[in-house]
Amino acid sequence: PQLRLPEKLTSLPEFYSEVDFQVFQLEGTIDDFSYDVWLSQRPNVTSLHYPCIEVMIWMYHEENITANYFVNVGSITVEAVVNGSVKNVTFTVYVLPHTGSANGWIGVYYVSDEQLEGNVSLPLSYMIEQSVFFASKVFPGLSPGQYYLDAIQVGMEFDNNPQGVAELGY
Image 1 (tube, rainbow, N blue to C red):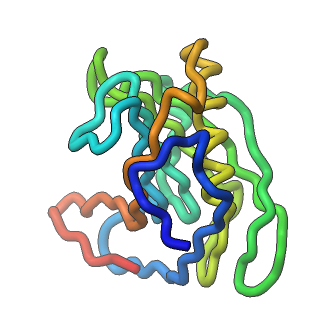
Image 2: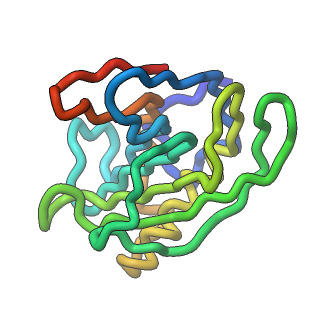
Image 3: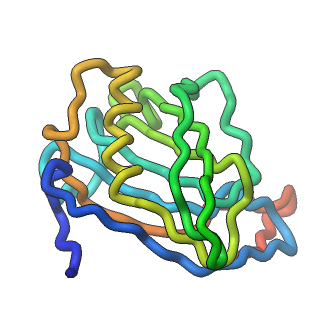
């Protein structure tokens, strides 16, 4: 059935999401190819603010996010289908307490321990629901019942080279 958004996390059906992609890079740096998911406490937000949660699921990445701003809150292993094979894929999970400013939203980053490309199917509903658990390790008191799933996007973030040129994509 169709997934209608916004949807309360506690009412979210179990679902996998499948993408089929390859990245290419001639100039610039690929930060990540990822899902970008918005969770809010009021449905239909147009911008994020605390205590909204932005969930990033990095399937492919070149950026290293172990900087001082990110809190390593553990890891999660999920059953995925990668290029037709069922396998366990582990993601290291980081929380960025306030994105952009002191009043900024919470970032939950799932960073795949291996580069995933091709046809990739992930248990997206499970990972989204677990995001509130990981965020609550930094912000106690958060629970899935407080949140709506507002948006799911997929795409690439990148940096250009020192001359301002970027020639890459998916």
